[in-house]
Amino acid sequence: LLPIVVANWKMNGSLGLLNNIILNLKAIEELTVVEIVICPPSIFLSQSTQLIQETKTNIKIGAQNCYFLDSGAYTGEISTAMLQQLGIEYVIVGHSERRKLFFESDIDVVKKVLSAQQHGIIPIVCIGESLAEREQQQTFFVLDRQLEMVLAQADFVDPNRLVIAYEPVWAIGTGSVASVEHATQVHSYIKAKVPTGVRILYGGSLKPDNAEKLFRQADISGGLVGGAALQAKDFISICESANRVFL
Ligand code: PEP
Image (tube, rainbow, N blue to C red; front, side, top):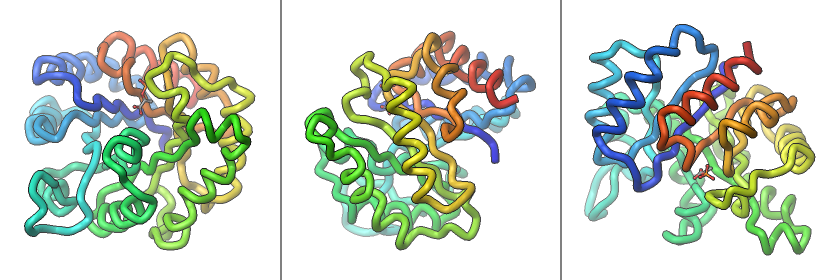
């Protein structure tokens, strides 16, 4: 299974950044054993897929969100059927910002996971506890709850077709990366719950100076990168760390 490094741009970036990052990544691409996925805002998805075709790179494009129905009166939403038409290969589902700011429930998350899989798109399912939950020793309880329906209903015939991202909410955008001890403990817990072969990424303040240490841990198959994915130099450095570890 290929390890993955995913860039989550959130509501950031521009067409200029897209060009810049894809051209810079192309330069290191022959050296990489990791799969690199860029998730720009949906308004840039079409140009992103065109650009990777034109530049003939292996970089994959992912969406940051989707709706679970194919079409209809759902103003502002984008379906997995539409993403499929564009050739999008991944979609981030259940990011903590979506759960918190846009009130996405575990039921919404599982519907999106199933819809993505039905359209041949690999869902990257984000799970993770908040600071308060961690302080109340609720971490494993929260992860169980977030995983329950996904594990019961998703298609694991090919375990490659679903990715989990463990993103402790207290580490997202805060600069406080999880300690190796915490990350290893949680990843091994998740690993024991999911079918063999499902990749589990770490996300939360990954930076060029901490990525390699985390990627070296046994049950970590790559990373989901927010802030550091907006600088070509930093993102490439994280991809290179992954490459050194997984080679
Ligand atoms: C994220 O948004 O998924 C994320 C991990 O952000 P950051 O790297 O900025 O913490």
